[in-house]
Every structure is written in C-alpha cells, then in structure tokens.
Length: 184
Image (cartoon, rainbow, N blue to C red; front, side, top):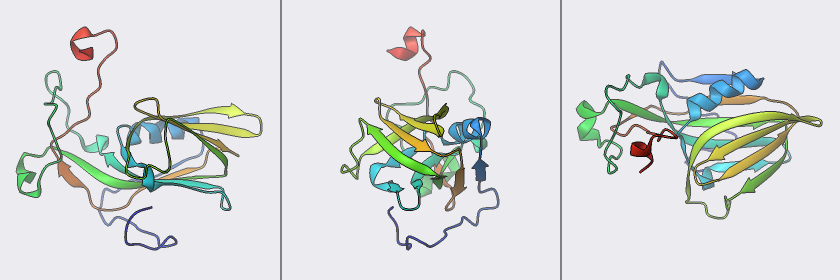
C-alpha cells in the first residue's frame, strides 16, 4: 500500500460523515459494491496477506451518497478532470480515499490484472459473491475484463474512509445497453 503510514497503523478520517461499513452477507456486500462502484484503484494499492488470510485495497472512491441528482441526460465532457482547489466553487461532486479489507481469504486469482504493473489504474465496476464448497467466492469486477476472485471462508468485509474528501467536477457515467446514442 502506498503512503507514509506504517503497515500496522490505523488511519481514520476525521470527517463527520466518513463512511464505516461492515458486510457479513450477500446483501451487505451488495451495499459495499454500490458504494464502491466507479472507484479508481492503483494496482500497487492492492495486497493479499496469506498469513493473515486478508485481502486489502485502497480506493479513490466517488462519493455517490453525496452526489446531487443529475438533471438532464447526465452527459459530461470526455475531458472532465478532478477539480483544482481554486475551482472548488464549481465542483459539485466529491471523492475520498477508502480502505477495503476482506478477511478469511484463502486464495486470490487474477484475470487481466498484472500485480507487477503497480501504476495501472483499475476502475471497479462491481463486487459479487456466490457460495462455493467450504465458503464464498467474492469477485471484484473491473472495466476492461479485469477480475479478482477471492476464495473466502465467509463474507467478512470492512470499508472505511481514510481521509478528507476532495472536490471534483467529474461524475462517472455509464452507457445504457441498447441505447445507440450512448454506446457510440
């Protein structure tokens, strides 16, 4: 994991509305998936600790829970980027660094993700689960067919915002299948 903190140091946000969520079943994992959708994750910020049976990552999370309703079609220019600090008055959205920890993980498989490519940015689309013999398979699905599959004893996930949110003018936008205008 990147940063100036030690591996055993607990980092907590001081923001009054910082998220701290726990998931122990499929419904809870579905909630975490919704909260983490469109998170940007640097491959170098993903780690598996087999001795502790722990999988962890740090995500640049879009704060969907604070996003205003979109008026119109929600289109944004392709060149939209995070707001500069002097543009705060124009920013309407926020991002925050969040830590995700999944415990009881026995094995990790990756598809189309090279852990040696530490600078690659992954876009998290969804987290799903399904029962397997002796536990659960938890799947992190990324854009461009990137997949991380975790074999776990059970669902035991913790998500926590790690720092203060920052402004952005960019809102994730997804094409709707079957709408040719959005798929172009």
